[in-house]
Image (cartoon, rainbow, N blue to C red; front, side, top):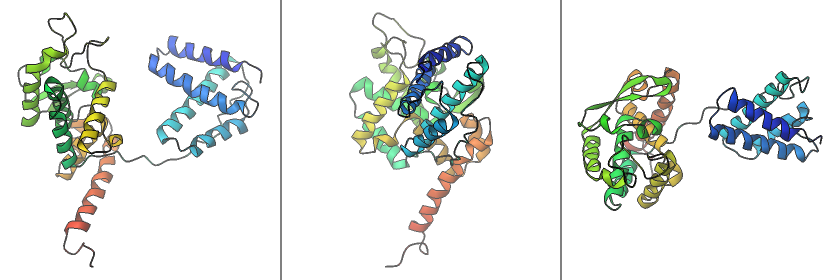
Length: 306
């Protein structure tokens, strides 16, 4: 090994931070991904600076063999490819060893979905939590499930957006695009109950906060990580696999249950804030599997004869 690999990685990460204004979490992820590649290549007596196409191809194949999720494997391949494009641009290498390696084609994974009774059990578990904690978690679950909010959209909601008991929210989603998000009676009731206990979550010494979900943490508002932890705890209490429950899964449940109820796909696209209908169409597969199961188990002619 020539020993240049670490220095080249540092230069790449510096470029990502300065020229592309990459977030700290993104830089950390890229660093870990490239460290993973370097560790694999070290076993072959190489580093990123002197790896050939065969070594890079072997690394990409190893990612699939490890049983990593498709998303994680794809991210690591992308990090290596971006790194080598940077190296080539700097003139440090005359070739890109990752260029000829084709990425494996993988079908898009279907989203995890909670059944209606599981949503009810999750809400029941949330309401059993003590006082303000339970009301806050119930409120968040109801808002996501009623409106299909992304977790980032939920936590960015200002107090003013719900102070007057509105029938819908104006949500600023990806790309700064605004959309209407409906609120049903259950969500509005949950918000009203939570607002009465909201002062319990204000930062110490603060009279109020602009956020709907304030926190005493450094950011002044609840974080996505903390919401995920609270949902996991509620899932365990409800007897639901915690791996199956997350803010994003609640958003998926909103879309899937609407489709199962007969909602038009274009309407669901608008409610979710998807720019492309193709993104929304994945729910037709999820709902289709569910409907097929219902026919097989509930229809007289679909039941297996014993």
